[in-house]
Length: 450
Image 1 (cartoon, rainbow, N blue to C red):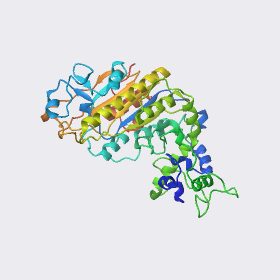
Image 2: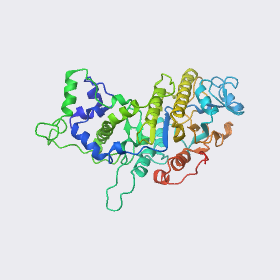
Image 3: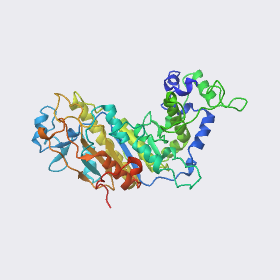
């Protein structure tokens, strides 16, 4: 295979201003994408309930996000970075939030925020990579290839059963959308590959910086004179490459990465015009901060209010690995998170979409109870946020003791298994059998209103 198709680095180095490899998909593959997509996207049904997943990447310090202001052990463990009660933003008699998280308090006071105490799983892993895999695959006991949202898309979003003897209809590629350069593990199913892009404007080709780059793009998107497939794709026999789906693709193991990138590109290419037109038709009704996180949420609000059939959106806010210099860094992150979430809630409410939207956050782990001088090291359990008009606001679950003798390896012990939240979201919000996704039943939380 010619590396101009598969290598983003190769193409970017030649001057093509892309954030998605989708713009380099050849015309014959573009047509193949329509067949692989199943139903015509223009006839796809708009989703009823929508889930927005926000990843706080790096391991957010839960104790300095939701502060136990009446807990002496907290202040003993954090003489330097502990946040004084008088400086924190009061939520109730026992807990306050970070002084920079003004937007988070606004959402809480409006009755749209549920705070889940001490969420994790048995024997948490403190590695960024492994812990993130566990949260995104919902598989603490084994290394899994597919994500929980991807399995949901595969198992529950393929339309009506066509009946015996008929080919199963694959889920719509726009069922899940991630605002990221690469599809996150959480959204990759055994067959399903989500749409993944940083901006709708980057789903297609824009003016090349060089004539050579423009010519390469045009060649890739033009059939040859004999009406066959493109020479640039397969110089040996001119056959189109296989187009696998998800993690169970048909190519060899060595080609899995390229095949996956190819599949992602096809999906993005297929929906490029529709996403651009859908978002352009929706005017936001709230003022968002100029941060990247807030602008991502602004775009998600437009897509929710459009005619897209998307059921799950995925947004990431990074920078939470605060081993040192935590005070200034966490201040900035709390303001960015809180202000972005508050604008998003205001916008959805004004657009008439808040009632059908639930947002949840997660981070791969919390931080250690004891500070290390100017920051905190990798820990275990931490609070998790769920936002929406249909959730029961306030606090949910049990806040554990911070007595050093009752900590787990010096960390905050978990009291709520994160898979209980996933099961609750799947069953009570997305209205599916959670065992098809999680493989077993978990205790559900009293999270949603009747």
